[in-house]
Length: 270
Image (cartoon, one colour):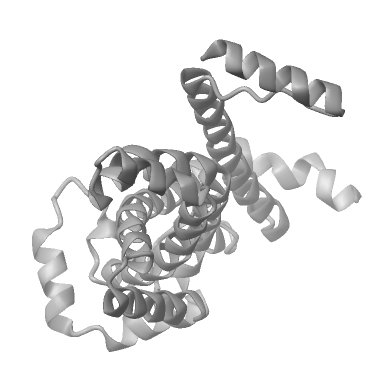
């Protein structure tokens, strides 16, 4: 334990530019995660809607697609796309990437990493969304149909708003996992935080104090903890805000008398 808390092993934090170099790599992780999150959420929603579609062929194809990608190891997918992606695709990606993107994101290898992250996480998110939608009472759809709403209108106005609220915790949990999984892209030589960490731990990288391996990776772990805790807090705030907006506060009912009283209050409210 003395090795862990020895001040000499943490001196690299305040000397040279080791910390700045690590933060630059961590920014690449956050940018990859942000792109993958946005695309995965959109693609995952379309997959979930296709999965619960009344059109049997569409539902079957979407189910097979989801089962395929969510059951493959992510590291295998990253390596596969890095090796199998055509060179023309990489060159096309490099030609359309804006110049203001960090140099690490302008490499064609990033397209392989993003493809793997998006395909895997969109499949997992699609199953989460499907479960959230399916958890609603069947009467919700029947009530919408009785009001003359079409299937698309009932999904857009009634089913999806309720189902999406139910799956916020599970969705945020998967997005946190996605953020952590961005460290896997270092295996295809993308200059992100893990690769920067290994460079810093090399002997006197910036010609100053030696940065021990254990302390460097503890610092990187703390960076992920901070970001993921912020995501969790944001999820909680969104959940509470939506609950206040919709007024969905539950009253605890225990005995038969309480149930009768609650039913009476409900009827008097109408």
